[in-house]
Length: 236
Image (cartoon, rainbow, N blue to C red; front, side, top):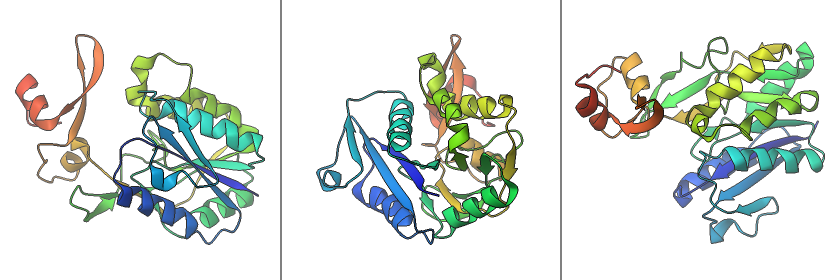
């Protein structure tokens, strides 16, 4: 089974991109291709990679690059696809574990837990939000070829929904009626800049963390400082 890893990137620091890329190269599973898609800001250091694609800036939180990357991987013979944000990284046994569960359970969709890391790089916890029931994070799937049609949800939608693209995708997966199974092993590492994760773990919320809120009927991203100023609240 050939597994494709799809990573859109924007303006992340080179060391962040290297961490992501290195975690894919370090996988114990042998048949992996890593597609990196530049969302308007290609890095010279990555241009010589075999599976590097340069796109104009799409300004949709990586949704168009994800969709294009999935289409290319499919055209080039991928049997399964996983998505990996540029600032995230995988434990070295991640793909091996996900493929094992997929084959054992004969399931077209496999999910897994994620580890949260603070903005200072320290480990926080295994995330309780992305539980594979109410929500599943973008980075925590393995999608088999017979379920690739689900990946269309990353594109051709109301652009205002891109800010909650991961939730739109999860609803599409659940609504599909396909068999979904879960690996119990947290093998995805996610550095969180969302205020909610600090709040749910009863930790001090850094002022520069992000909050998705609705203003004049539109979903928008604000810092925790702006959220407090706009709402007068401190709880997220």
